[in-house]
Length: 336
Image 1 (cartoon, rainbow, N blue to C red):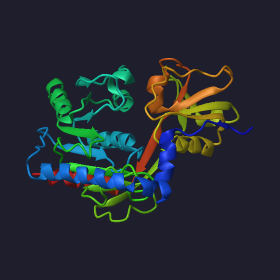
Image 2 (image 1 turned 90 degrees about the vertical axis):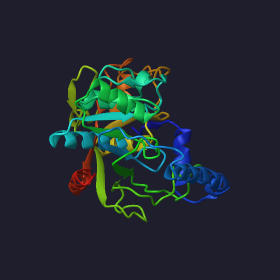
Image 3 (image 1 turned 180 degrees about the horizontal axis):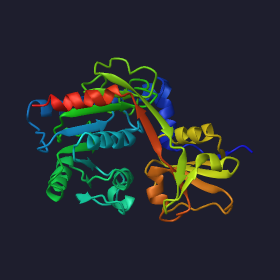
């Protein structure tokens, strides 16, 4: 039976336009020139010292991207945190907490609601085993984190390449398999800032790094864990789900990637439902056919489990070329 497919969200249709320099991209190009001028002006103000970046007092690693939409930043952040802990560091994680309904600086705990801290910080707090704080101004988050956990000796910022108010020691720029798309700045293309730009390391899911990359570049592969789990932590091998009708949900930047990875595991998707990125699921209603097992991403599960604890979440795992971590260690050891 062929899977029913919901109409792609508006964000996905926009990303399709960003893959080439078509009529829509060229129509938006004048706006991208204005956007680019503002980006360059802001960076120049920081460069001249008219706007000041503040340092956290411990090494800061930024894991971010220069493209709008999903590039795999959070799984990379988790991999970096694991590596740092293995090397004897005591890391903490800070984030803006995009999509949350609160505005203050607060800690994200394992039982925090995504609506209060953001879905990605909620996921990190559940899985990383390190302190996680969110604030619009990341320096406020780092200060609160270090005050609450004074043993923290390194900060990893999940997203924030463009948040120049937080001084950084290492910048890691992550790209998905589409690279820089059509090469235009927002809104004509996917770029948040001009590329190429300085970075300490580039991770890329495409066969080759984006054109113009001068920093050391390393291959990044994304895939699903071979198991899924429900809200109680019960694990189910993906192989055991083959032949069952599944209702797949994805409220992420690139939902089609998740659906494709499920199908690649031999799973039958009776329904593949793409929802807007960071969708809160409070207004979502389950279809009446309860025979279809709900299956979703880990990021969506932190919100969906409140209403449907039987939903199965499949973790996204990343495989990073080993040389990246050698580069990361070298960058940290060479800082003043």
